[in-house]
Image 1 (cartoon, helix red, strand yellow):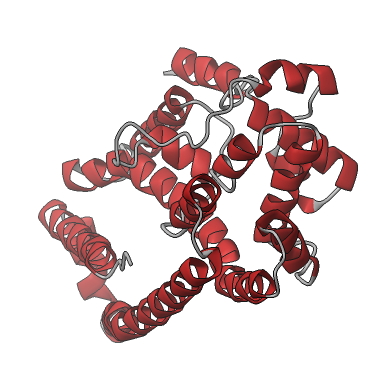
Image 2 (cartoon, rainbow, N blue to C red):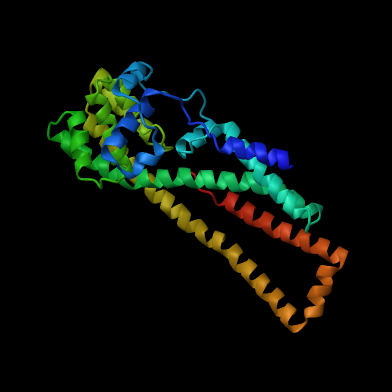
Length: 315
């Protein structure tokens, strides 16, 4: 066990970056180094402009995934966790091993199974929280940006100039503005327009980004009224946001009810321990009673996990 933990620590000290030296990371790094914004910690620092141009040919119009399945590698990318899937799995296994080792001194087989599951649940929860945080940061400014862009396009501005003008009125730290600035910076360095548009916000797990990108690319290829298309996209985004907020509010009571029930159970147990301490202490000290306690705790934890899984809203 000591050797395993030592190996895990050595691996953690040398966590490799995701994606290697692709051109999109190089341009993001150059741009954030110049701006010095809060996004600096999520981008690698480029060695030179020439190195970025060397890899610029690797950019595709839109690197669509081969499968719609949200793999661990994609989740790490969307959450900006700069580690490989293998490293993530090793950290998960290490947390489970430590919890199991500590729990073996206090718990029986029932809770030891829960200890083994703590690693995957804990790491998956942290990763999903990072993904959701970036999604919410992008989503809150996305619909206003589209509406502003539609208005500028109807005045006769070309798409790229309108995008730049629409981003000027946004908060400098807004995620969507940072992504737009990176896209425009690619264009200034000479990356083809299709490639620059195609890699817009590709590390944000938002369902409407692909529609925006394809609308821009198709309008350049076959023409059409881009403002009408983006206006419909803005309305769809608004409706989706409204439905998502309504759904989250609807399940909020169900999520909160289980915590109320747990609070009542804990309060009753404390009351029994204060009024009749020998009952609680004898139940804990008795081997069979302690097994029942562990079974009850496991049932409560399983209920919490099940309620959270059922009430997850994907819109």
